[in-house]
Length: 423
Image (cartoon, rainbow, N blue to C red; front, side, top):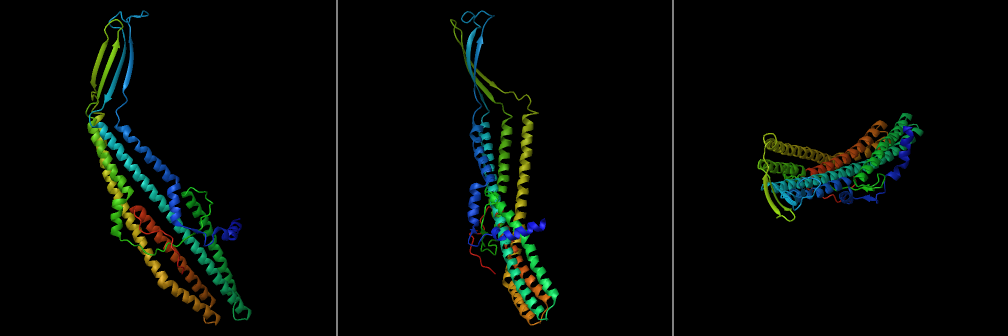
Protein backbone atom coordinates (compact mmCIF):
# COMPACT_ATOMS: atom_id res chain seq x y z
CA UNK A 1 0.00 0.00 0.00
CA UNK A 2 2.79 2.43 0.93
CA UNK A 3 4.56 1.65 -2.35
CA UNK A 4 1.35 2.41 -4.28
CA UNK A 5 0.96 5.79 -2.53
CA UNK A 6 4.58 6.69 -3.29
CA UNK A 7 4.07 5.77 -6.95
CA UNK A 8 0.96 7.95 -7.12
CA UNK A 9 2.86 10.91 -5.69
CA UNK A 10 5.61 10.47 -8.25
CA UNK A 11 3.06 10.34 -11.07
CA UNK A 12 1.38 13.48 -9.76
CA UNK A 13 4.69 15.28 -9.14
CA UNK A 14 4.47 17.56 -12.22
CA UNK A 15 1.07 18.76 -11.02
CA UNK A 16 2.35 19.34 -7.50
CA UNK A 17 5.26 21.46 -8.69
CA UNK A 18 3.93 24.55 -10.51
CA UNK A 19 5.66 25.86 -13.62
CA UNK A 20 8.46 28.36 -13.11
CA UNK A 21 6.45 31.23 -14.57
CA UNK A 22 3.71 30.63 -11.99
CA UNK A 23 5.66 32.35 -9.22
CA UNK A 24 4.65 32.72 -5.58
CA UNK A 25 5.89 36.12 -4.40
CA UNK A 26 6.74 36.35 -0.73
CA UNK A 27 5.75 40.01 -0.55
CA UNK A 28 2.24 39.17 -1.77
CA UNK A 29 1.90 36.35 0.75
CA UNK A 30 2.99 38.59 3.63
CA UNK A 31 0.47 41.24 2.59
CA UNK A 32 -2.30 38.65 2.47
CA UNK A 33 -1.29 37.34 5.89
CA UNK A 34 -1.65 40.82 7.38
CA UNK A 35 -5.08 41.20 5.82
CA UNK A 36 -6.52 37.72 6.32
CA UNK A 37 -4.83 35.84 9.16
CA UNK A 38 -7.49 34.97 11.80
CA UNK A 39 -5.07 35.21 14.72
CA UNK A 40 -4.04 38.73 13.72
CA UNK A 41 -7.70 39.71 13.37
CA UNK A 42 -8.51 38.21 16.78
CA UNK A 43 -5.84 40.13 18.69
CA UNK A 44 -6.70 43.26 16.70
CA UNK A 45 -10.32 43.06 17.87
CA UNK A 46 -9.09 42.38 21.41
CA UNK A 47 -6.99 45.56 21.31
CA UNK A 48 -9.94 47.55 19.97
CA UNK A 49 -12.14 46.16 22.73
CA UNK A 50 -9.62 47.17 25.40
CA UNK A 51 -9.73 50.78 24.17
CA UNK A 52 -13.36 50.96 25.31
CA UNK A 53 -12.32 50.08 28.86
CA UNK A 54 -10.56 53.39 29.42
CA UNK A 55 -13.63 55.71 29.57
CA UNK A 56 -15.48 53.07 31.60
CA UNK A 57 -12.83 53.01 34.30
CA UNK A 58 -12.68 56.82 34.45
CA UNK A 59 -16.43 57.22 34.89
CA UNK A 60 -18.28 57.64 38.17
CA UNK A 61 -20.39 54.74 39.45
CA UNK A 62 -23.98 54.88 38.29
CA UNK A 63 -26.14 57.08 40.54
CA UNK A 64 -29.23 55.75 42.29
CA UNK A 65 -32.73 57.19 42.23
CA UNK A 66 -35.13 55.92 44.92
CA UNK A 67 -38.88 56.18 45.39
CA UNK A 68 -40.52 55.69 48.78
CA UNK A 69 -43.96 55.65 50.39
CA UNK A 70 -44.51 56.15 54.11
CA UNK A 71 -47.91 55.55 55.64
CA UNK A 72 -49.18 55.36 59.21
CA UNK A 73 -51.10 52.14 59.67
CA UNK A 74 -52.95 49.93 57.21
CA UNK A 75 -55.15 49.98 55.15
CA UNK A 76 -56.08 53.64 55.70
CA UNK A 77 -54.11 56.07 53.51
CA UNK A 78 -52.71 58.83 55.77
CA UNK A 79 -50.90 61.12 53.28
CA UNK A 80 -51.55 64.74 54.31
CA UNK A 81 -52.94 63.65 57.65
CA UNK A 82 -49.92 62.30 59.45
CA UNK A 83 -46.56 64.08 59.66
CA UNK A 84 -44.64 60.85 59.13
CA UNK A 85 -46.57 59.91 55.98
CA UNK A 86 -45.35 60.95 52.55
CA UNK A 87 -44.21 60.08 49.09
CA UNK A 88 -40.47 60.54 48.60
CA UNK A 89 -37.96 60.87 45.77
CA UNK A 90 -34.22 60.74 46.43
CA UNK A 91 -30.99 60.77 44.43
CA UNK A 92 -27.59 59.45 45.58
CA UNK A 93 -24.17 59.31 43.97
CA UNK A 94 -21.09 57.38 45.11
CA UNK A 95 -17.92 59.44 44.64
CA UNK A 96 -14.54 57.67 44.85
CA UNK A 97 -11.79 59.39 46.78
CA UNK A 98 -10.09 62.04 44.60
CA UNK A 99 -7.53 60.50 42.23
CA UNK A 100 -8.96 56.98 42.18
CA UNK A 101 -10.81 57.34 38.88
CA UNK A 102 -7.81 58.96 37.23
CA UNK A 103 -5.55 56.08 38.30
CA UNK A 104 -8.09 53.46 37.17
CA UNK A 105 -8.17 55.13 33.77
CA UNK A 106 -4.38 55.10 33.60
CA UNK A 107 -4.33 51.38 34.49
CA UNK A 108 -6.82 50.68 31.69
CA UNK A 109 -4.72 52.78 29.30
CA UNK A 110 -1.61 50.73 30.13
CA UNK A 111 -3.58 47.53 29.63
CA UNK A 112 -4.68 48.84 26.23
CA UNK A 113 -1.06 49.60 25.31
CA UNK A 114 -0.09 46.07 26.35
CA UNK A 115 -2.76 44.52 24.10
CA UNK A 116 -1.37 46.57 21.20
CA UNK A 117 2.08 45.14 21.86
CA UNK A 118 0.55 41.65 22.04
CA UNK A 119 -0.98 42.33 18.63
CA UNK A 120 2.39 43.50 17.29
CA UNK A 121 4.00 40.35 18.64
CA UNK A 122 1.38 38.15 16.98
CA UNK A 123 1.79 40.02 13.67
CA UNK A 124 5.55 39.53 13.72
CA UNK A 125 5.12 35.87 14.65
CA UNK A 126 2.68 35.18 11.82
CA UNK A 127 4.92 36.95 9.29
CA UNK A 128 7.87 34.90 10.53
CA UNK A 129 5.85 31.69 10.16
CA UNK A 130 4.92 32.60 6.59
CA UNK A 131 8.54 33.42 5.75
CA UNK A 132 10.06 30.27 7.25
CA UNK A 133 7.46 28.02 5.59
CA UNK A 134 8.10 29.81 2.29
CA UNK A 135 11.86 29.33 2.63
CA UNK A 136 11.46 25.63 3.45
CA UNK A 137 9.18 25.33 0.42
CA UNK A 138 11.80 27.03 -1.75
CA UNK A 139 14.53 24.65 -0.55
CA UNK A 140 12.32 21.63 -1.26
CA UNK A 141 11.53 22.81 -4.80
CA UNK A 142 15.23 23.33 -5.47
CA UNK A 143 16.11 19.98 -3.89
CA UNK A 144 13.67 18.13 -6.12
CA UNK A 145 15.04 19.95 -9.18
CA UNK A 146 18.58 18.94 -8.14
CA UNK A 147 17.56 15.32 -7.61
CA UNK A 148 15.94 15.28 -11.04
CA UNK A 149 19.19 16.61 -12.52
CA UNK A 150 21.08 13.95 -10.62
CA UNK A 151 18.68 11.33 -11.92
CA UNK A 152 19.28 12.51 -15.49
CA UNK A 153 23.06 12.33 -15.00
CA UNK A 154 22.75 8.86 -13.49
CA UNK A 155 20.68 7.86 -16.48
CA UNK A 156 23.53 9.03 -18.67
CA UNK A 157 25.96 7.00 -16.55
CA UNK A 158 23.65 3.99 -16.90
CA UNK A 159 23.73 4.31 -20.67
CA UNK A 160 27.53 4.41 -20.62
CA UNK A 161 27.61 1.35 -18.38
CA UNK A 162 25.20 -0.58 -20.59
CA UNK A 163 27.24 0.33 -23.66
CA UNK A 164 30.44 -0.85 -22.03
CA UNK A 165 28.75 -4.02 -20.79
CA UNK A 166 27.39 -4.77 -24.27
CA UNK A 167 30.89 -4.64 -25.77
CA UNK A 168 32.39 -6.70 -22.96
CA UNK A 169 34.38 -3.97 -21.21
CA UNK A 170 31.92 -3.52 -18.34
CA UNK A 171 30.32 -5.66 -15.66
CA UNK A 172 26.66 -6.33 -14.94
CA UNK A 173 26.97 -5.20 -11.33
CA UNK A 174 27.73 -1.66 -12.52
CA UNK A 175 24.50 -1.65 -14.53
CA UNK A 176 22.57 -2.81 -11.48
CA UNK A 177 24.24 -0.20 -9.25
CA UNK A 178 23.25 2.55 -11.68
CA UNK A 179 19.64 1.36 -11.71
CA UNK A 180 19.57 1.23 -7.91
CA UNK A 181 20.89 4.81 -7.69
CA UNK A 182 18.25 6.00 -10.18
CA UNK A 183 15.53 4.33 -8.10
CA UNK A 184 16.99 5.94 -4.97
CA UNK A 185 16.37 9.36 -6.53
CA UNK A 186 12.65 8.56 -6.77
CA UNK A 187 12.76 7.35 -3.16
CA UNK A 188 14.20 10.72 -2.06
CA UNK A 189 11.81 12.80 -4.18
CA UNK A 190 8.65 11.14 -2.85
CA UNK A 191 8.81 12.41 0.78
CA UNK A 192 9.90 15.83 -0.46
CA UNK A 193 6.77 16.04 -2.62
CA UNK A 194 4.69 15.13 0.44
CA UNK A 195 6.42 17.85 2.46
CA UNK A 196 5.66 20.38 -0.30
CA UNK A 197 1.96 19.58 -0.02
CA UNK A 198 2.16 19.99 3.77
CA UNK A 199 4.00 23.32 3.58
CA UNK A 200 1.59 24.67 0.98
CA UNK A 201 -1.29 23.79 3.28
CA UNK A 202 0.48 25.46 6.21
CA UNK A 203 0.99 28.70 4.27
CA UNK A 204 -2.59 28.64 2.99
CA UNK A 205 -3.95 28.21 6.51
CA UNK A 206 -1.86 31.14 7.73
CA UNK A 207 -3.47 33.16 4.93
CA UNK A 208 -6.94 31.76 5.71
CA UNK A 209 -7.20 30.00 2.35
CA UNK A 210 -8.18 26.39 1.65
CA UNK A 211 -5.23 24.09 2.29
CA UNK A 212 -5.15 22.79 -1.27
CA UNK A 213 -5.07 26.23 -2.94
CA UNK A 214 -2.14 26.36 -5.44
CA UNK A 215 0.68 28.68 -4.43
CA UNK A 216 3.12 28.63 -7.33
CA UNK A 217 6.89 28.30 -7.24
CA UNK A 218 8.78 30.16 -4.47
CA UNK A 219 11.37 32.65 -5.67
CA UNK A 220 15.01 33.14 -4.81
CA UNK A 221 15.38 36.09 -2.45
CA UNK A 222 18.82 37.17 -3.61
CA UNK A 223 20.10 37.17 -0.01
CA UNK A 224 23.33 35.36 0.79
CA UNK A 225 24.58 37.34 3.77
CA UNK A 226 23.37 39.04 6.93
CA UNK A 227 23.74 42.83 6.47
CA UNK A 228 23.72 43.85 10.13
CA UNK A 229 25.91 43.41 13.20
CA UNK A 230 25.01 41.59 16.39
CA UNK A 231 25.23 44.78 18.47
CA UNK A 232 22.79 46.55 16.15
CA UNK A 233 20.37 43.65 16.45
CA UNK A 234 20.62 43.56 20.24
CA UNK A 235 19.99 47.30 20.42
CA UNK A 236 17.04 47.06 18.04
CA UNK A 237 15.56 44.16 20.02
CA UNK A 238 15.83 46.03 23.34
CA UNK A 239 14.19 49.10 21.80
CA UNK A 240 11.57 47.55 19.52
CA UNK A 241 10.74 44.02 20.67
CA UNK A 242 6.98 43.84 21.42
CA UNK A 243 7.64 41.19 24.05
CA UNK A 244 10.04 43.50 25.91
CA UNK A 245 7.71 46.47 25.49
CA UNK A 246 4.83 44.44 26.89
CA UNK A 247 6.93 43.42 29.90
CA UNK A 248 7.92 47.06 30.47
CA UNK A 249 4.28 48.13 30.29
CA UNK A 250 3.49 45.48 32.90
CA UNK A 251 5.81 47.33 35.26
CA UNK A 252 4.15 50.67 34.50
CA UNK A 253 0.73 49.10 34.97
CA UNK A 254 1.91 47.53 38.22
CA UNK A 255 3.10 50.91 39.48
CA UNK A 256 -0.33 52.37 38.76
CA UNK A 257 -1.97 49.48 40.61
CA UNK A 258 0.24 50.14 43.64
CA UNK A 259 -0.84 53.79 43.56
CA UNK A 260 -4.47 52.74 43.31
CA UNK A 261 -4.08 50.28 46.19
CA UNK A 262 -2.73 53.11 48.34
CA UNK A 263 -5.70 55.26 47.35
CA UNK A 264 -8.00 52.44 48.40
CA UNK A 265 -6.90 53.09 51.99
CA UNK A 266 -8.81 56.36 51.73
CA UNK A 267 -12.63 56.19 52.00
CA UNK A 268 -15.09 56.80 49.18
CA UNK A 269 -18.00 59.19 49.63
CA UNK A 270 -21.72 59.10 48.97
CA UNK A 271 -23.76 62.27 48.50
CA UNK A 272 -27.52 62.38 48.20
CA UNK A 273 -30.56 64.58 48.19
CA UNK A 274 -34.26 63.84 48.65
CA UNK A 275 -37.70 65.40 48.57
CA UNK A 276 -40.78 64.04 50.34
CA UNK A 277 -44.33 65.14 49.46
CA UNK A 278 -46.76 65.16 52.44
CA UNK A 279 -49.96 66.35 50.84
CA UNK A 280 -51.52 69.26 52.74
CA UNK A 281 -48.59 69.29 55.14
CA UNK A 282 -45.27 71.01 54.32
CA UNK A 283 -42.90 68.95 52.14
CA UNK A 284 -39.63 67.70 53.55
CA UNK A 285 -36.17 68.00 51.98
CA UNK A 286 -33.08 66.00 52.78
CA UNK A 287 -29.36 66.34 52.02
CA UNK A 288 -27.00 63.49 52.93
CA UNK A 289 -23.22 62.98 52.90
CA UNK A 290 -21.67 59.63 53.86
CA UNK A 291 -18.32 57.92 53.67
CA UNK A 292 -17.02 54.37 53.83
CA UNK A 293 -15.44 53.03 57.01
CA UNK A 294 -12.36 50.85 56.26
CA UNK A 295 -13.44 48.44 58.97
CA UNK A 296 -11.72 45.49 57.31
CA UNK A 297 -8.66 47.41 56.16
CA UNK A 298 -6.16 44.91 57.58
CA UNK A 299 -7.58 42.00 55.58
CA UNK A 300 -8.77 43.94 52.52
CA UNK A 301 -7.13 47.26 51.56
CA UNK A 302 -3.78 46.50 53.21
CA UNK A 303 -3.60 43.07 51.60
CA UNK A 304 -4.50 44.62 48.26
CA UNK A 305 -1.52 46.95 48.62
CA UNK A 306 0.78 44.07 49.54
CA UNK A 307 -0.48 42.06 46.56
CA UNK A 308 0.12 44.91 44.13
CA UNK A 309 3.65 45.44 45.50
CA UNK A 310 4.49 41.76 45.04
CA UNK A 311 3.04 41.79 41.51
CA UNK A 312 5.14 44.85 40.71
CA UNK A 313 8.30 43.04 41.79
CA UNK A 314 7.23 40.05 39.69
CA UNK A 315 6.82 42.31 36.66
CA UNK A 316 10.29 43.79 37.18
CA UNK A 317 11.82 40.32 37.28
CA UNK A 318 9.73 39.37 34.26
CA UNK A 319 11.18 42.26 32.26
CA UNK A 320 14.75 41.21 33.06
CA UNK A 321 13.92 37.61 32.16
CA UNK A 322 12.30 38.65 28.87
CA UNK A 323 15.28 40.82 27.91
CA UNK A 324 17.64 37.94 28.62
CA UNK A 325 15.52 35.52 26.59
CA UNK A 326 15.22 37.87 23.62
CA UNK A 327 18.93 38.72 23.60
CA UNK A 328 19.80 35.02 23.83
CA UNK A 329 17.52 34.18 20.89
CA UNK A 330 18.95 37.08 18.89
CA UNK A 331 22.49 35.88 19.57
CA UNK A 332 21.63 32.26 18.78
CA UNK A 333 19.98 33.03 15.43
CA UNK A 334 22.66 35.56 14.57
CA UNK A 335 25.32 32.86 14.96
CA UNK A 336 23.21 30.44 12.90
CA UNK A 337 22.89 33.05 10.17
CA UNK A 338 26.63 33.76 10.15
CA UNK A 339 27.44 30.05 10.03
CA UNK A 340 25.02 29.52 7.14
CA UNK A 341 26.48 32.58 5.39
CA UNK A 342 29.99 31.15 5.58
CA UNK A 343 28.89 27.74 4.31
CA UNK A 344 26.91 29.30 1.45
CA UNK A 345 29.97 31.17 0.27
CA UNK A 346 32.14 28.07 0.64
CA UNK A 347 29.72 25.88 -1.30
CA UNK A 348 29.12 28.43 -4.04
CA UNK A 349 32.66 29.67 -4.62
CA UNK A 350 34.75 26.55 -3.97
CA UNK A 351 33.15 23.21 -3.20
CA UNK A 352 30.41 23.01 -5.83
CA UNK A 353 32.52 24.25 -8.78
CA UNK A 354 35.27 21.77 -7.84
CA UNK A 355 32.76 18.95 -7.38
CA UNK A 356 31.24 19.76 -10.79
CA UNK A 357 34.65 19.58 -12.45
CA UNK A 358 35.30 16.31 -10.64
CA UNK A 359 32.11 14.80 -12.07
CA UNK A 360 33.01 15.88 -15.60
CA UNK A 361 36.47 14.45 -15.19
CA UNK A 362 35.11 11.18 -13.78
CA UNK A 363 32.72 10.78 -16.71
CA UNK A 364 35.57 11.18 -19.19
CA UNK A 365 37.84 8.88 -17.19
CA UNK A 366 35.14 6.22 -16.90
CA UNK A 367 34.58 6.23 -20.67
CA UNK A 368 38.30 5.49 -21.25
CA UNK A 369 38.48 2.97 -18.37
CA UNK A 370 40.70 5.16 -16.17
CA UNK A 371 38.29 5.01 -13.21
CA UNK A 372 35.75 2.49 -12.00
CA UNK A 373 31.99 2.93 -11.91
CA UNK A 374 31.78 3.08 -8.10
CA UNK A 375 34.11 6.10 -8.08
CA UNK A 376 31.92 7.77 -10.73
CA UNK A 377 28.79 7.19 -8.65
CA UNK A 378 30.54 8.57 -5.58
CA UNK A 379 31.58 11.74 -7.43
CA UNK A 380 28.05 12.24 -8.83
CA UNK A 381 26.40 11.75 -5.43
CA UNK A 382 28.93 14.00 -3.71
CA UNK A 383 28.44 16.78 -6.24
CA UNK A 384 24.66 16.84 -5.87
CA UNK A 385 24.79 16.40 -2.10
CA UNK A 386 26.78 19.64 -1.93
CA UNK A 387 24.13 21.36 -4.04
CA UNK A 388 21.41 20.11 -1.70
CA UNK A 389 23.42 21.35 1.28
CA UNK A 390 23.81 24.74 -0.38
CA UNK A 391 20.06 25.26 -0.60
CA UNK A 392 19.52 23.93 2.91
CA UNK A 393 21.97 26.50 4.25
CA UNK A 394 20.35 29.21 2.11
CA UNK A 395 16.95 28.40 3.62
CA UNK A 396 18.55 28.31 7.09
CA UNK A 397 20.07 31.76 6.54
CA UNK A 398 16.77 33.23 5.43
CA UNK A 399 14.86 31.56 8.28
CA UNK A 400 17.39 32.88 10.82
CA UNK A 401 17.00 36.39 9.41
CA UNK A 402 13.21 36.03 9.57
CA UNK A 403 13.42 35.09 13.25
CA UNK A 404 15.80 37.99 13.91
CA UNK A 405 13.27 40.31 12.29
CA UNK A 406 10.63 38.95 14.64
CA UNK A 407 12.77 39.49 17.75
CA UNK A 408 13.97 42.97 16.76
CA UNK A 409 10.76 44.18 15.03
CA UNK A 410 13.09 45.46 12.34
CA UNK A 411 13.18 44.81 8.59
CA UNK A 412 16.70 43.50 8.03
CA UNK A 413 16.45 42.69 4.33
CA UNK A 414 13.97 43.44 1.57
CA UNK A 415 12.17 40.19 0.81
CA UNK A 416 11.46 41.30 -2.74
CA UNK A 417 11.94 38.02 -4.55
CA UNK A 418 14.79 38.74 -6.94
CA UNK A 419 15.42 36.63 -10.01
CA UNK A 420 17.38 33.60 -8.97
CA UNK A 421 20.92 32.94 -9.99
CA UNK A 422 21.07 29.18 -10.41
CA UNK A 423 24.28 27.29 -9.79
